[in-house]
Image: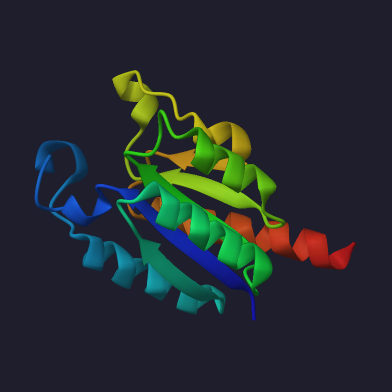
Length: 147
């Protein structure tokens, strides 16, 4: 079974509690339930991790590198800009990482700096963006294992 690490970054624990006009009323727990449903439909295993501490997120990427993670999905949230250590960690791990955003940061003039280390970026599709990211990750993993 494919193992995908799903990381929620800085401030994701506040989803559904603040900035409702931008991100809506869904709590992080709602996101995680939906992601688990998407993963079940695709027969992939997901491990979800959330931290407001950059070092813990970096450590999680490195643990995945040394462990059995096949791909990662990250919603960096507040880690989009000004976190070169996280960008470096993503570029160093052996597995592909896909960045996902429920909204479209570019529509607000934001550009993610960690995108340069990611295999791809999915933005603006709401919670369904995670389904797209899981499908993309699964495809990338199958490409790697078939060569």
